[in-house]
Image 1: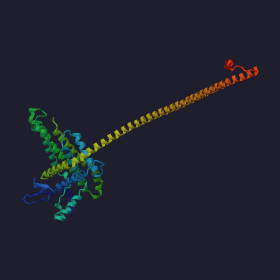
Image 2: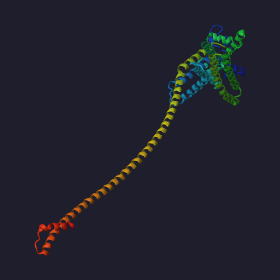
Image 3: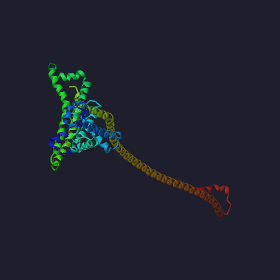
Image 4: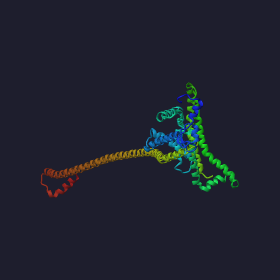
Length: 282
Length: 156
C-alpha cells in the first residue's frame, strides 16, 4: 500500500492504527505519526477516522430515514419508504416482543443502534486498501503528509472506543431506568439483597455488580472483537499474492455479510433486553 | 487500541443520533404504519360489510321478485274471474232481456188476439142478426134478441 513496499507486519500494523489527534508529550497539538506517539497522547486524544466515518454514517442513516419519514404516506409505499418501513417494523416488532413497558426512547434507540452499527460494520466489506489508500492520497497531496504517517482505519466498530462509547451510553440508560422505575432504594436493593438475602450483602454486591458491569463490557467487546477479527482476516488475506486473494476474500466477505448484520442485531437485541430487565422488578 | 476521547465523542454522537431518530424519524414512520394498518383493517371490514350488504340485497331482490310474481298471478286471476263474471252477467242480461222481450211480444200477441176476438164477436152478432133476418124474413126485435145473440157470441 505504501510508496515503498512494506513488510507484512508493518502493513498490518499500519492498517490497525487509528488516525489520532491529540497533544504530544512535548505540549504541541497534532496528529500522531505512529502507534507509539498515539499511545503517548493518553486519554485526551481523539481518533479522527473513527469519529469522521461514524458521524458521516450516522448522518447518512438519519438523512435517509428522515427523507423517507418526511414524505411518508399511508398509501402504497414504494422505494425508500418500503425499506424504511421494513426496518422500522422489524425493529418495532423486536422491541414489542421483548420489552413490555412503555417507553418512547427504546424503539428509536434500537433502530439507531441497528442501522448505525450495521452501516459501520458494513465498512468492513469495502476492500481493505481502497479507502485508506484514498485517505493517504488526500493526506499526501493536500496536506503534504508523509504517506507512512497517514493512518486511516475505516471501520469504526473495530475501534474499541466506538463500541464502548455506545455500550456505556446504553449502560447509562440501564442505570437511569433502573432508578426511575424502582427508585434508588429498589436499585440498590436489587444489587445487594439478592440472590442470598441481607446476610450476604458484600457477596451479593460483588455478584450483582459484576453482572451489571458485564453488560456494557460484553456488549462493547463482542462487537469490537467480531469486527476486529474480521478486519484482521481481511488484512491478512490482503497480504497474500494478489492472484490468490479472491479465493479467500470472497468467501470471507460473503460470510461477513452474515456477521455484520448479526452483530448489529445482537447489539440491538441485547440493548432491548437489558433495558427491559431494567424496567422489571424481580 | 487506546481508550481516549473518542469514547466520549462516540457517546455524544450516539446520543444525538438517538435523539434525532426519536424526534424526527420514528414518530412519522410509526404513525404512518399504524394509520395504514388501520386503513387496511377498515378496508377489510368495509369489504366484509359490502359483501354482507350484497347478500342481503340479493335476498331482498329475490323476495321482491317472488312477491311481485305472486301479485301478478293474483291480479291475473282476479282479472280472469272478473272477465268470467262479466261474461256471465252479460249472458244473464241477454237471457233476461230476451225473456222480457218475448213476454212483451207474447202479451202484445195476446192483446191482439183478444182484440181480434172482440172484433170477431162484434162481427158475429151482426152476422147472426143478418142471417136470422134472412132466415126468418122478418125483423127481429133487436132488443129482444140481442141478449141471446150476445150469449152466443160469448160462447165463441
